[in-house]
Length: 274
Length: 292
Image (cartoon, rainbow over all chains, first blue to last red; front, side, top):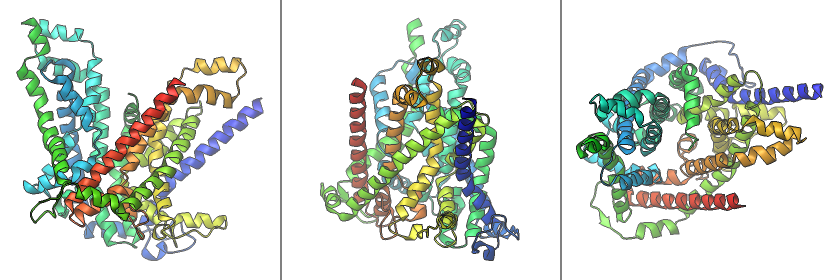
């Protein structure tokens, strides 16, 4: 019995380690390749630890492409898009949770209805609209669509409705109105769900590829994923430089992940509970 | 007076809602309406718009390219969905054991989820390289001469599927894990007292109680797989020889390579219709299973 349990535990660890290895290996392979010179890349069997380590690839990537600019664009776009998303969605969520107005049910149904439409449906028309108002290659076009998410309005409304209305009474007695309730009660009590919405929004914006691909042709406005795809188009077989570029593009999000890992995993796991 | 204060005046509601409504109109509602109109027209972005009725839909439904992209999308789903569900469920079951270090492993498995699709696809293109790639090197250990994955029409889609499973399994694992942790220990203890084996516990407690989680994961994964694009575009652009051409890749190609705005719009509505019907079918199966 005892021996059986130890064997079982051992087997579980072995499986977890093999799986974990498969998850981490591509990242290590990227790191290893990014430190090699062109000759060492095409050597069989591959060297996992390069015999000669060079940082030339990183220098080359930064001089050939405005990678710092891509990075700053990504940060700028993702931060503003996330802030806007949180403000717009929480205000709308509050209206649906606490206010009474004509057509509320119908409007909410319409919001939910749009969630069924795949984003590809709106993609082409949205590009045409942006082109008509001369917003292609603009930060507005990259940021503003990120403010809008029916899913987030829904998520926040559900959470706000769970906050007891009796708390509102205290504000009324003190002569406060809806803004006071919204800012002093609802928002402070909703930190977990706001964190979830914020993380989802940030990651969505940071990793977004298709929309920037359509709306951006000017390298000055490109975000990291698009910049990286540009790199890939140029250097199809210079794997060491490609891996250096990829490494640069994933470092910021991995740093964020290391520090906020608990919140990110927890936040994303909440999307599944409905 | 008191009542109107509680439920808010029209003005208050207007202020709270207007940013969202304006945004939803510009970025969602108007584009949806434009897309409907566009799907009945022919337009190349520059010339004049020509009304063609349902011609776009008919052309698409008669074209081989549409059926081959649909076939490839379905092929993607048929391998991706079972793999990601089974592997993630196994990992979640392992992580749910009271072992030391599960938090560490959970963090590792989740790493690809936070990484952008573009970065993942570029790295895996290198892993799949026919001559110098890591995968074929490992395969050579067991005497397998690996194909040149991404340039081989027989293997390119498999490579895309492997990459997709690798990228997404962390997310699906977390959803399963949340479900598993909600099952009270008491159930398992009671079953142990009755002498149930591990397998019996799995079949009679875990899987039935995770029914809702399975349903959620299948619906989400189905919807996402019908919209597969980023990895395909970076790894193969739909090639070689159109062997990884999928529906969204066709939408993108029609709109931004061929400048056929009408065709792209019609195709996106066909995609909507397919997703809608498939979701309905899955929900129907679900309610049927719940009754039994």
